[in-house]
Length: 301
Length: 301
Image (cartoon, rainbow over all chains, first blue to last red; front, side, top):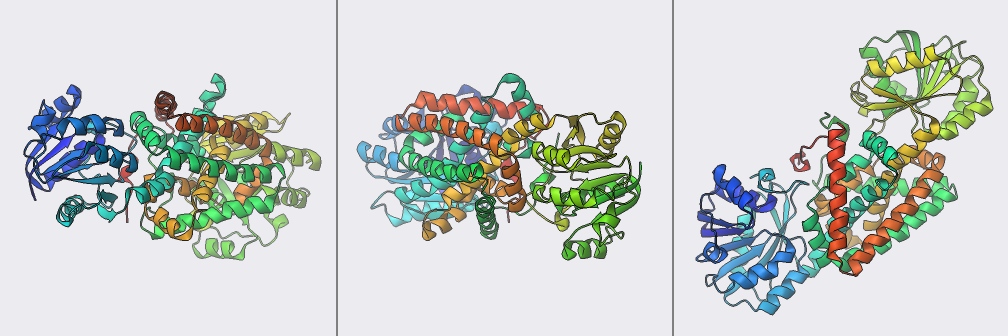
């Protein structure tokens, strides 16, 4: 499908892409670069990739597709550093969770003869690092791609096909659409998950131990979300701060409504609030985004 | 273990207790009462219970253990109605998620010669009704019991043994301790889950459809929690309103801190916030309250 694919950054997502394109034979040659010796040593030892570049330029030279899978805050340095080593007509993509800021960077760098098409595979776990990567990571998951304005059609088709071959369902969006939707489906929920865990854990130490003991009643599910890679999330919030900040305002407005109903002992209003959200779950299950298998079957101990 | 056990209310929790005590042979006779004809017809048809009382008095007469598994708001009427039919020295318990208000009801009713010991099995799913019930519901789950002041030791031991036989780990707490801990581990997280789903779904209709489509990135997990029985949760919030309201205040305080860091583009502060919550998850896994298996393996349609 491609002669050569290069992956820069082989953590959870990068190493999953590596495994997936290798399994599906999507390139004759796969080259990787990661500035962590621990990461590259692991990939070598496990025989996941043997073509490991110690130099980022050498990694991208002659590549038809270059995938950046590092935290958002590292993009600028990486792109500035590789831009003169990229092959003419190469496709350059990423896996980041925010798009608008990256588009600005690309615009300022003024890439020539390279097709920049941003990707966001909506996949991952709360784990980090290549050990947690999986070839099946993208199966049945959405991948949103945002081509730069005036991008030719053929490279978009090629990149779309690559994501589809490793299992993704692909949707094309503008960076603005992407960032607004993701601020609501992912970034705001993560902010809230971090916040509930932090709120509950700000109690005194003896109570804290009891809270951990009895966390199965609801808190536990938030701690799973709030255990994601902190560096990655710092970058996401910095890059999408306006949308998330707007979301927080409307969240607090709604929460004050709930608190008023609570303080007024307004049972009708509480029932109405709790009942309205039940429908949303049904629609999500209908849309194939989750299973209706109840959660209590989760493996214990 | 008991001659006769009666269960009032056979929804998700009541029918699970019924299945569990039947499986473990914990009583010679099990009698049930539910004011929904649909519920009793289902239990009869599936041969889960044949001794179905159409009269609540007849259901509890001669019982050694009476378990109320109905919404909190129905307790007063039920207890007033059965109090003169209860056997001398019977144990009366419940399965409710809040304790302090119930203790007041019991105190005002002035039950005589009956051992009131409140129970709270921390178990359940987002489903409702007897179809979703399971004999294994309580396996490895905590059950918190709160005996009334001056309750004799023997009935506490008997009730504790019953919960243990159906798989629970039992902890004895005062109603005040219970309500404070549960407001943090369960009630506040549920309030927040309801609120995030309601916030996100208050956008315009066309955006709403896209949000449902791409909900896998975080929102999905909240909709699972926010799909729980609205009547049950209305009652929980009414009965534990003071603790939850206090929790909401401290949640908003923390959220405003996060928003400030966001608006100030304060990366260090954001990293610090996101990193602090990662540790909590490790402690929860260590405490055996969850598995560290990542979530992306969840079954997809």
